[in-house]
Length: 330
Image (cartoon, rainbow, N blue to C red; front, side):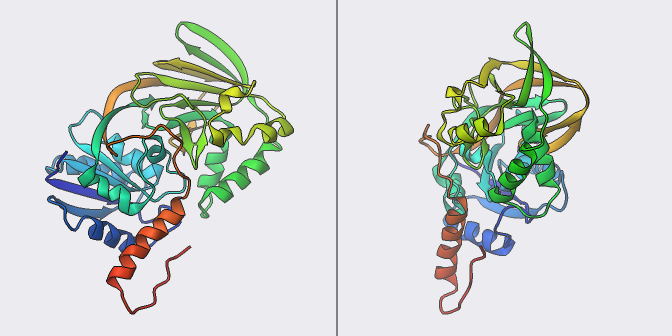
């Protein structure tokens, strides 16, 4: 794997570490021996990464790298569907579901190094209405929590789970009708996730057997449950054992139609959207050429994202700012 020209698309508002200059310097320091040209461009508004990536495809870039969270990755990758342009991720978001799903390191330095030492893998995508997704899409409780989380300025897993706990106490599950593989089922569900990879992000594994290149989408249903039942089984979402829960069901299909009683939110790779009463979800096979490690582990990846970010920044600071006291932000 080799490149001639690489574009980094950086969302300066992503994640817990919002020091764009330091992050950029870590990447430049890591790639100081690279044989390819590279440059950076920052996003300024929602949807901007898609515009930048589309333009870069016409300017001779053979790799485009999203520096941000799952939202930035989704916008960037959506411009590269079925293009002969490699897609990379340097995960600095709060969930980093795509990176975890294909075993991209959560370290800025290690993720950047994949441009030299990594390989490419062709993965599928999903499409819900007119939006692509590469991790998961879904309706129900998680879509509501995602919408509320998106409305606040504080990021990270703690506020996300705080919102989830609060809303669970008062949430009333919907009845959804699902049509797939020539059959129809009606379910009173807490949530329905259509998964391309194993997890939502933050180490939460909703589809333990999902593979992003198997030509199928995993339909994951969590049925209506009471609080104590949910609390007891909640750790199984982190251990990859959610399939052992009686209130969980999983199917596979290439397309599915979701019908609900009334309009409500859905999410695309964690980004909330508003929808009508019907949603169509389809598989987009062999959609994206993504840069990954040469040896891909099937074990659940580490959840120490912030620690890895700080370690990467510390390496750069210690080598470039000797004698000066610099504090890495929490």
